[in-house]
Length: 453
Image (cartoon, rainbow, N blue to C red; front, side, top):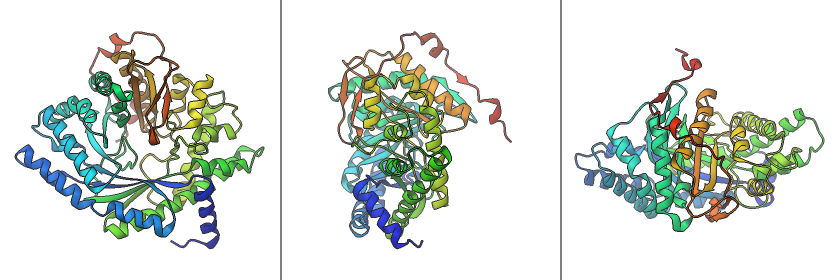
């Protein structure tokens, strides 16, 4: 891949002044060959394979940072969904596997390890049930393990039994980590149409159709996009979209360079570049501020969904021109706690839970890092999840929910998570009883347009 001198100069400026970085280099590792006849041997095989596969991940990424001058914020691992290797295990044994994953992550020095996951969109295996039951205890006992459950696909519909169970799970996880604001919930996400090559946490796992090992890279650059569109204030939407496309192209080219270099050095296949605009709590690194730069006085105001739709589409179009292997989520993230502009909009009263839900119809993920009152009951949490997941199923896209009922906090309070997780204002939840709806159970059928064969 040839890169011009001018591109190099532009990239240096974006890194130094506009918060451009590689948000994550994530190594996916298959653990299918770690299954043994007794669970103790399985845990040992898992630990050994992760440590052997990823022993050079962090040192090589740090070398790339030094040599190319490109910041790589996180080094991460994703694994085969753990429920697949937990056949016959009890919930207690599953939680022990989570501690094994934590120890492996500490040994190789990665920030997070994802894949403590189950795929239950059409129903549960016994291993799925055991793993899901163990999730609150597993997350409370670890700090680097991330967990996810895929409860729906456009082809299968929505497993409402799983949705009900997850509402209860989230409440239990929050209570077990109440001293840190329910922080375990920040490492758990529930999906519709979960991608198998997502490098971002908490939803990363290594799909069964993936290679033995693979490198997936997540690029981010909200600050770069905002600076670019500042230069076209007053121009029409075609100019605005073209400006975002060109900027996304440059960002993705940098991601592809790092991905291929990491792949070469580690002797691991190159998977995808995820070109999501992933914000941070830092000023100048916000998706909300991009929307406001487009002409909305406060994110969440009228016009916000249209602005986000334009942004998401232009980012994807620019990215696919820069790399033949774009994947993961790829678009614009709108997490509340991780975006200082979103936090400001919630506090200003312009951004509500309902408006965020509308915005998720056109963006990459869903209701992300949403703090709600600790008194919110499990059936209400399940109903919020069902609403969001249905958007993904009907629109044949990925949607997700990462919601935190903060113990002891009410609307208007603020919970501090620190680091990339930032802080979250506790948002209001409409007062209505959805328990009879959630208690129906069963499966919401797949939409008619899923019948494509």
